[in-house]
Image (cartoon, rainbow, N blue to C red; front, top):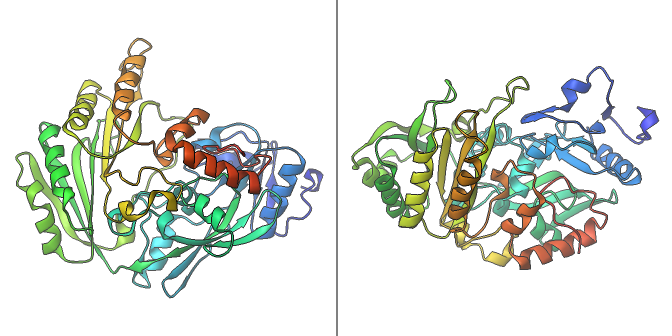
Length: 441
C-alpha cells in the first residue's frame, strides 16, 4: 500500500490490480469497473488522503456510495469507496447519514424514531448519489426532493479541506449540492430534516387494456389530489421471470388512513381495466425495493430512450408515450407524479431543474438482438427525442448514459453558469469529473 504514497490513510485500504481482492473491490452494484486504484475509506481523513493523492497524480476521482451509477464503469482514475462511512444518527428531527449509507438503512433507523425522509424507491441506492442528483421519491409531493430536505453537509474539497456546509456557512456550495451532482467534492456526511412518519398506505392497482384513458384519468386525479398521495405508473415487458409483466399503478399515501387513501384513488378504481391488487398499511422501509446486483455474466441490454420532466401530461404526451410502449415489444414506460411541495421550491433556490413540472416520464426500448437492430435503433431514438422535446429538462439520476452532452439538457444555461462558478471555487482542476460534469468557469 505504501508504494502508492497513500501513507496518510488512518484505517482505510488501497486495492490495486493484481491484489487478491481486486475483482471483488472493483465490482459495484451496476457492473464491474476498471479504475487505476480503489481506496476504501474508513474515516474522513482517509478521504482527504485519497483526494490529495489523486490530485498529486492527476487522476480523476469517482466517488462510490451505493454503486448504482453508470460512472463506475468508466475506466481509469481513483474509485473512492465510501461503503464504510455508513453511520446514521438521529437528533430530534435531524438525521445525519454518512456518505456510504444506503436509503434502506436510513429508512430503517428513522422508522424507529417515527420519522421519514423522501428517498427514492430502492433500499440499496446510496444516499449520496440520489441526493446530489435531486432525488424524486415516494413523498415528493408532500416533502419535495431528497435534496430539498438537505440542510447541511460535511464536504472534503479537491484541496483536501473539510468543510461544514449549511445555509450560513458556504451557502453557495449547499445550493450546488442540492441537485448539482457530485461535481464539488466528496460529501462524507449528509444532514437531513426528517418528517413525522409512522406508517404509509401502499396500493398496487392492476391495469389492462389501452393505457391512454388510464393515463388521462391519472393526470386528472393527481391534479387536485392531496399532497399525501404520490403515484407511479409502470408498464414493463416480459423479460424477467421475477418481475411480472404488464402495467400497474402504485401509490403511496403518507399516514395510516386507508379510507382517505382509497377515496383519493377512487376515480382510478372506477375505471374499466383497473383493479385493486393491494391496498394496506405498511412501514415505509418495507415499500423500498430490493434490486439485485448486476450479474457480470449476464449484462443488462442497452437502452434506447430517455426521460424528461413534463410541465403537463398533455393528451399529446399521453398518446406518444403509449404509442412508444406499443410499438416496441421490449420496452418500459414509467411515470411519477410531481407537483405539490416539489413545485413550491422557487427555481433559483436549488440547482434542480424544472420546478414547474408536474410529471416525470421515462420510456425506452431494451436493445435486445432480434427486437432492436441497426435499422430501427435510430427510429426508436427519434421517437423518444420527440417525446423529450415536450419536456423541460432531463433528470440525471435516471439515465445510464455517461455522455457529457447530457448536462446541457439537465440544466438551464443560467444554472450551468452558476454551477460553473461554484465549481471554479471548489474544484478548479475538475478533479471530480466522473459525473454529469459541469466544468469550472
